[in-house]
Amino acid sequence: MARTYHEMPPLWWLEEELELSDQHPSGLVWKTASRHHEPGDQAGILRSDGRFYTLSLLGTKYPAHRVVYYLRTGVNPENKDVLHDKDNVARDNRLKLTLSQRKTRPAPKYRRRFRDEEGQLVYRDPEMIYTFVSKNPTETQHG
Image 1 (cartoon, one colour):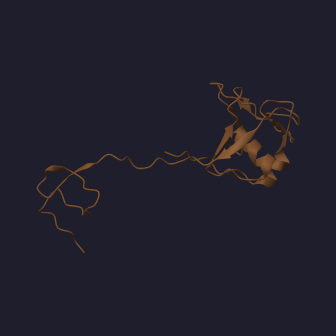
Image 2 (cartoon, one colour):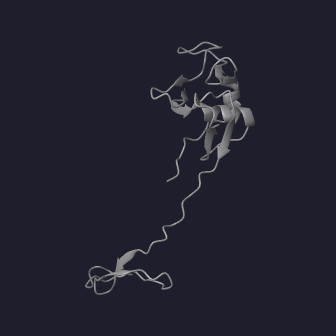
Image 3 (cartoon, helix red, strand yellow):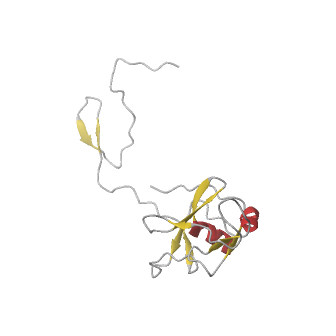
């Protein structure tokens, strides 16, 4: 199942609030001050499981590597995955990031079973076109 991500803030807003940085592993510093940070402070914190950095923007948490990719390339990642290079085990956002469309798996090739008109469990024939049969034959459809 594909992941769904929060919609990213507009690029112009991100450029006003954040700046790419080689000083911090999150890859981001704040340009503006708030009650939680000063200009020049690292934007984002390392998750407790150590998998990647996150930051809160407009009340929503975002993975920092998605924001870095957006600022670096100008391309909104939308529902695609932003991946760290496989050699980047520290998940350092200053290094290479790539955009990847998640591949969907093909339908299983084994034959599925269904119940026929008599209620018997039978294997599906891939060449046959099926219609849906009501479980309760006394039910009628109302138009």
